[in-house]
Length: 148
Image (cartoon, rainbow, N blue to C red; front, side, top):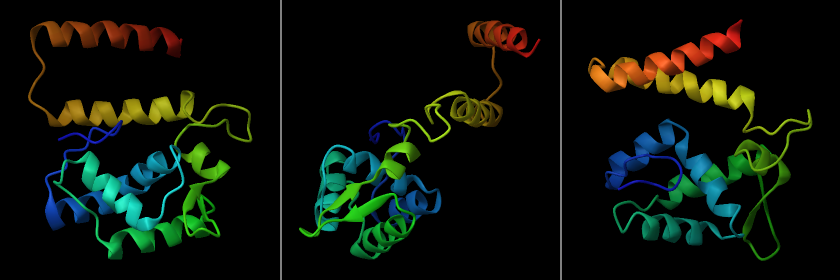
């Protein structure tokens, strides 16, 4: 089962919770949820469970410390109604708002970082052959033009 936008495989249970937290993915998932609407921690847990069709529900011991940390980092704030809402810093973190430098955080720097991750993935997979190799060669030529 794939999570929205992130492409993570939610295998379910404690292992998925631990792996997702360790990789930092949960922070971005929670920010993504909060950019839709403010939610309480319990609502976030329930929404993740709903979106993963019951395969994974983060524990309170995962969600609440994460929310507290994100609040300290000024990515979210807790309202008087005890619902967490995303801040401008949180929107910037997920590329939904322009940074103070004036460029969208989803721009060149983040694309380069994403490309680096994609190349690492391709290096880890089986050897590329045929049509895939040809497509990557054309992409490589286009990138090399950018570097001139």
